[in-house]
Length: 160
Image 1 (cartoon, helix red, strand yellow):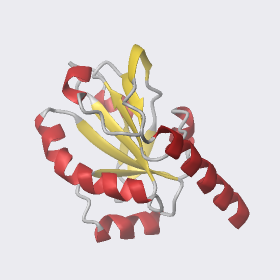
Image 2 (cartoon, one colour):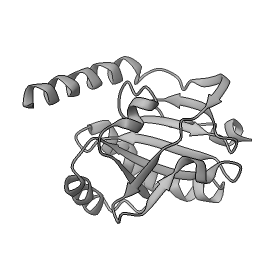
Image 3 (cartoon, rainbow, N blue to C red):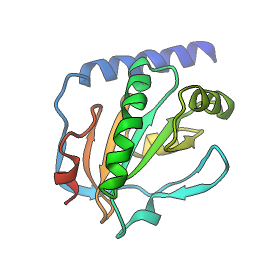
Image 4 (spheres, one colour):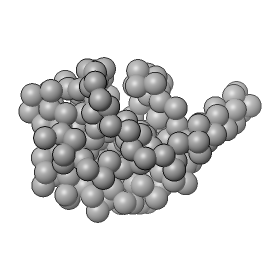
């Protein structure tokens, strides 16, 4: 089991490293985002479809062991205010980690935006996750308009 986790971590790191310096990828022919149902750390359930036709959503898929994720999650504490002002919901999805470990991490880093648990990585798989962190911007029509390892600088234009 430990070897499997190390192998997966290594693969994710290699995939992420290949993409970290790439420019954000605007999706020219947006496709519908797969719906999901995940719980936050308090047990409240969220679905992606609850936002459809109401507001855009920015997903960030991450893990506690990823150093770049830690940096991005801190950065998102500042950006969360702007996103909320722009009526874009931020959902941080932890991929395949123990709930207690995630809760401790969230408390330690004082993360105050929504953190969801993708316990079995089913959501990550449905979005074909290659590395963490990954940002996925979904317009209010439920279509993926951006998918990359860097924060979408022009997020307002992408969802308008």
